[in-house]
Length: 346
Image 1 (cartoon, one colour):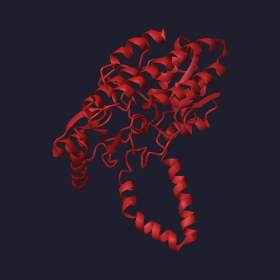
Image 2 (cartoon, helix red, strand yellow):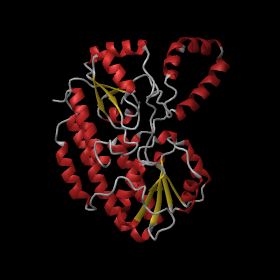
Image 3 (cartoon, helix red, strand yellow):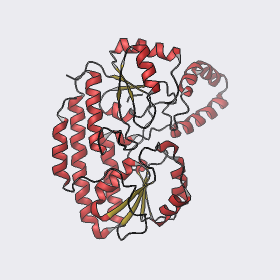
Image 4 (cartoon, one colour):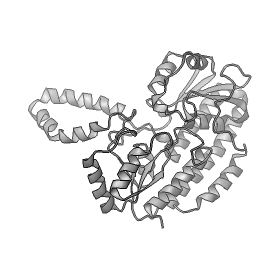
């Protein structure tokens, strides 16, 4: 799996000038219920989708998020009220495969405009990226039995063919959904969302287009900052307790090393700690990153045993008072500063 200088400070200024909308609230949980306003009512599945809807929709939309601030989005279960709210909305914006409960509700909903962000860019397989944080041992187990599986396939052609089909199906489920952490892919999604808004609410199409163009400039500036900031570093490897940064790592030439996909609440095994200690020395790793919505216990256990530092690398699945920024752009800038420091940016 793959998962720079303080030039970033200029991005915020440029972005604020470009957007021309003013800063929109990062948390719209107090918005009027979908379907009960004169605006274009959008139900967003979780924060990154909410951010896009607010930025592109501007004053013409009323955005309601299904995932409350501080709630872990992967584990979301919808209430009957939320399901009904979705049915009354003008549009629902979600990311298929990230939240099974939302996928099911959308499939059963009569909402006219269904916007699947996963269909607006190309999802990729970054290895055994778990979606529920509970399948950390699968990748290790597959590695242990790789030779056995290969031998079995050679001796049993028909069974091997069937196994390949099953593997292909598994591969589809293993596609990494964390596309919003790559500014380029997030911009692709934003463009698709804008087109959907324009089609569904043509009376305000010109404004949606204007807002979308401004957002594209913001994301383009963010991409440039990451490229410049991470171009020259002492190391390209970073440790994290959540395999969420595959797209970001791939975009900027880094390598993400998750703590064997372990549940954030559990402790890494002695064998895994030893393995990561060795890798940390070999690759010059200085920092173990944890995130805001889950416990830092795993990261701190590994850091203590391996003699490493800890810091926050926020997967931006939600904004809380613990977030290092009040919206997507600010938190992504904070993430860049954290990576610059941990990787030894020059």
